[in-house]
Amino acid sequence: MKGKSQRLFWVINAFLCLLMGAFLSAGSVPSEWQSWGAETDWELTAIAQLLLRGEPKAAQFKEVIVLPLKEANAFINPDGYLLVTEGLLERLEGRNEIAFVLAHELSHFIKGHPRNLETDPSRLEHIRTELERGLGTSVVGTGLQLLVGAIASYYSREREREADAEAVRLMAKAGFDLQAARRALQRLGDKGGVLSWFRSHPFLEERIKIVDQAIRKWHSSAAPPPQLTPPPQRAPEVYVDLQMAPWTGPERAQWQAFAEEVKQWFWTALMEVTRQGTCPFYPVKRWQRHRALIWHLQVTPIAWSLSSTAPNWHRWEVRMQWTFGRSKDEPLIITEERFSTTFEAKEPAQSAILSSASLLAHRLARFVVQHCQGMVPPKTH
Ligand SMILES: [Zn+2]
Image (cartoon, rainbow, N blue to C red; front, side, top):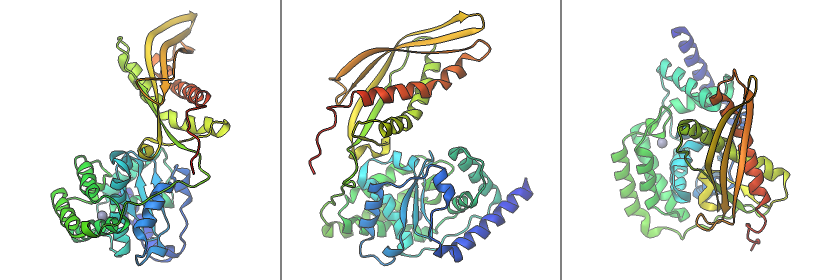
C-alpha cells in the first residue's frame, strides 16, 4: 500500500510538472473529462468572460467545465480551464453566488498564484479513490491524475485572502450583487467533505471579514447588473421539478430508495426524450433552475402490491397519482398510473424494484413531453 501511494505521488508530481511546463501550451480538454460527463454551460462561460473583461491574462482563459461530482469543489488549472463540480453549484443559490466562486478561482489565475503540492501520499490516494467513486470509473488516465493533483494542491492563506478580495473587485466591475460573495461563503462554509472547496480554502471567519472589507471598498463603483442571455438557437430552458411523495406503508424505506433512484435517472431520461421528440424545450438540471421556467411534476404512491404471478415469479406493482403543471397548486393534469415489474423469485425484491427505476424515469419523461404543448410561452426575442 505504502509503495503504491508513493508511486502515485510521484506520478502526480510528474504530471503536474508537465502541466506547468510543456503541457501548458497544449490547451485541449483531456478526453477523459468528456467521457466522465464533464460539460460546459453557456451561463458559466458568460459569467467568466464578463468577470475577465479587460483583465490581463483574459485571452489565456479557456472555458468553465462542470464535473458531475457530488463533492463541492472548484479549481482552475494553469491552462485556463476552470473546473467546478455540480455538488458545489447545487449548494449555491443563483447567478450572483456562482459568480463569486468563479471570480475567486479566476483571481488565482489572473494573479498567477502558485499552488503548493500536497505531499501526503495517503491523502492523494484517498482523493483518487473518492474521485473514482464519484465519477463511477476506475480508469487511471492522465485526466484523473491531473484532477487528483489539482484537488490535492492548495494555495497559501495569503493567496486565498488576495483571491477573495480580488473576486469582489471583479464582481463589482461586472455588476454582480456583492452581498452574494458573503452569502456564498456562508453557504459553502457550513459543511465540509473530503474534496470540499473549504478543505483547500479554510478560515471561514477570516474570509468573511476580507469579503466585507472589499464590499465596502467596491460597492459604490459597482456596474449595473449584467444581462446574460442564452444562445439564440437554444429552446426555452425548463427545470422539471420532480417530487416523489413519501409512501406511508411498511415499505416506506423501499419506496424512498426507489424514488431517489428515479430522480437520479430523470434528467438523463428527459434529455433523451426531448432529443427525439418535437417538444420545444431544453431540460436543465437543478442548479440551473434560477434561469429556467419551472414545471412541477408530483408522483404520489397510493397502493403497493407484491405478489406471486407464477411459480418462481414475483410481480411488484405500485399505483400512483401524477400531477403536472406550471403551478403546484393548480396542476393542468391529474392522472392515475400503474407501474409494475416482474422478476424471478430468487432475486431480492429490493434490487428488482431499484433496477426498474430508470424505466419509470423514462415513462415520466415521456409523460412530460406528451403534455408540454402549450406549456412553453412563445419566444419573445
Ligand atoms: Zn482559492
